[in-house]
Image (cartoon, rainbow, N blue to C red; front, top):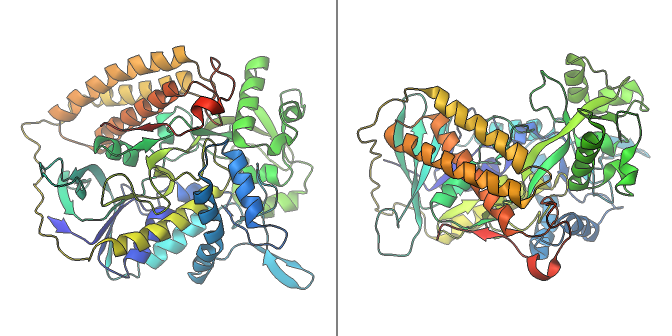
Amino acid sequence: MKEYDFVVIGSGIAGLSFALKAARHGSVALITKRKGADTNTAWAQGGIACVTSDEDSFELHVRDTLEAGAGLCDEAVVRTIVTEGPERIRELAELGLHFDEREVEGHREFDLGKEGGHSKRRVLHVRDATGKEIEQTLLREFSRQSSAELFENHVAVDLITAAKLGFATADRCLGVYVLDERTDEVESIRSDRIVLATGGCGKVYLYTTNPDIATGDGVAMAWRAGVEIANMEFIQFHPTCLFHAEAKSFLISEAVRGEGGILRNHRGEDFMKRYDPRGSLAPRDIVARAIDAEIKRSGAKCVFLDITHKSPEFIRERFPHIYETCLRFGVDMSKQAIPVVPAAHYQCGGIKTDVNGATSLSGLYAVGEVACTGMHGANRLASNSLLEGLVVAHRAAVAAVHKRPLGKQNVALPEWRSGNVQDVDELVVIYHNWDEIRRLMWDYVGILRTDKRLQRASARLRNLQREIREFYWNFKVSVDLLELRNLAAVAALIVDSGLCRKESRGLHYTLDYPDRDDRQFKRNTVLSRG
């Protein structure tokens, strides 16, 4: 049995930020199921929303966030994260991260971007690869920590709790079972402070901007441990994913629209003006629904994002990664509009936490996209996610360090027992179930929903979960099987949460209840196995 003062599962901005600060106070194990840099953070193009200019204010940032969140944001949480943001940005700069700047009247200042729903320019960025630069900066700093270890190609299986071990005392988190992919052995790792920073669940949908790792692992593990899960019906669909047969999940950043990009239909019309006075810079839920409506009305396969009115030099300098990627697929965005469609992008719900990342299970914290702090409400304001990850990870580290004295707690964990199981004989069954989940979620639980579609999805998921449970208990665990098990659990949580909300709000839009109902549903959807 390995033992650490802190165990962090996930190596994105939130997990790494927590790990770096915790490493000053004790031993840290950072567990990630691929390489350290294989995270949602590394894919983030736009940047970090933060008040840094004299033209902006905390009040404006709070107001924009609350408006985007459609009445479900926790205003106190929003204010905390917005006002503490600049200090966390300063810490990133001290680690060597250089955000893009420009020269104004003889002095240097941040070159701030603007995205949908923001009333001011406030998005700090490093060209169009902000997340990649942040990831590399934090990983470089983590590698210098003598008290921290990185476990790559390790997949968390399940949380170990006092209740699962049969203790009579109040339930708390005691450790985690982890599969070492290289040895196919499951290890017990002991800690009184477990941090879930596993990111989102985009792969539960057929089309997503997320990398393959985004299978909802943290939410599923917390659910199985009896932890409260909130607002999983609010899945954000990014309006602009590159539409190309060979382009897998490539996001066209909202910053392109922030710099003047216009959404046009197949006739070349600026259609967004019909849906919202803010046009192409309306919040993401509005833009995604508008694109979906345009595609269905016309029978076209996509819409187009047009920034050809900007100079080729500006486009290549501001969006080098997007420009080169589009060019590789035969689209010169300086001369032609980019074909785009919506795709699943961000989970606004997740493990219910406070602003310090604490969950309903003592000793368990959740930070980043896996958590539901109350920051995003029913719809995330663009580029608020990296900000939330930084601030909440810092607060969680402070809270975890001061929770109890560090040191061994004299609790021995049982070894993992596989029992009389065999190797999976037909991987095709796993792949078929994976594909079925993603297709039914796209068809029945997408941008537009109905009770009938949700009920159909629920019935199919119940059958799939029975099959998956049988597989799980009769065969040796593998990465594919664990991810399938987690996808099924998260899909069911999204469907059940959607069935609970009999109104349309933010990202949850149902044709059966098209209006917002503040009298009955201005509240979080909270589920737990208990």
